[in-house]
Length: 257
Image (cartoon, rainbow, N blue to C red; front, side):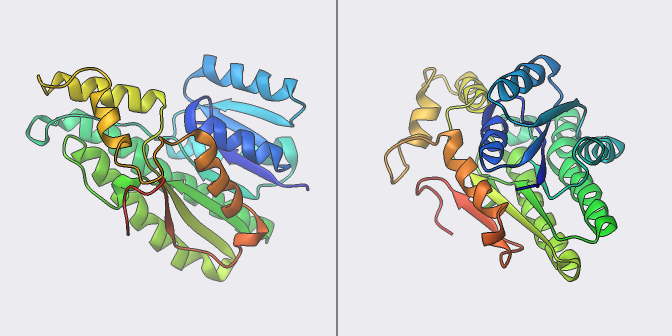
């Protein structure tokens, strides 16, 4: 295979798992994260495993940075085939206490970042005259809105909408746009969500929120990064060429849509 993928937010967590699976699939990888230490550690780890990889630090909320990420892929490996808009943040707060600063920050990263990444990738695919695949990080919160996660849920509903719109506009260019929707994974993000929920509920102990959410999963276990990476691997492959505009849930049986 001679394909190239950019994965934003891939210094750790689900993004790292996605990038690792794509590397195993034969992709050359551009790792991206705002956390330089995590990014460099992951890059070194991948290189030690023999994968072709470069890394680039940047803020996904800035439109010109996505142009830089794409340029890194083209300069390093000659082309772009898959762009994974994985980077995102969470905010846990009661609806009435959510601040203007929090709203601006989470929408800048979770929504603007997806918009700008999709634009940059689509432009490159059209310049190449090739097909391309854009994959966006949605969530079960893009299908079901949750208390204490009002702002986060709103951003993920927006990601789903952007995915639908972009898929319609770019279909004639043979560019597919899909979203993957993880559930409850034991990641640093979920550790933060759990800790924040405890602050607002005197009856909860650390770990209770995670246990409550993960306890409702039909398959009886919380999600691992590999569960998400497996879906992204399929969507990034030629086998998914006839799939576009979808926001596919991978949650072990938690949200049924």
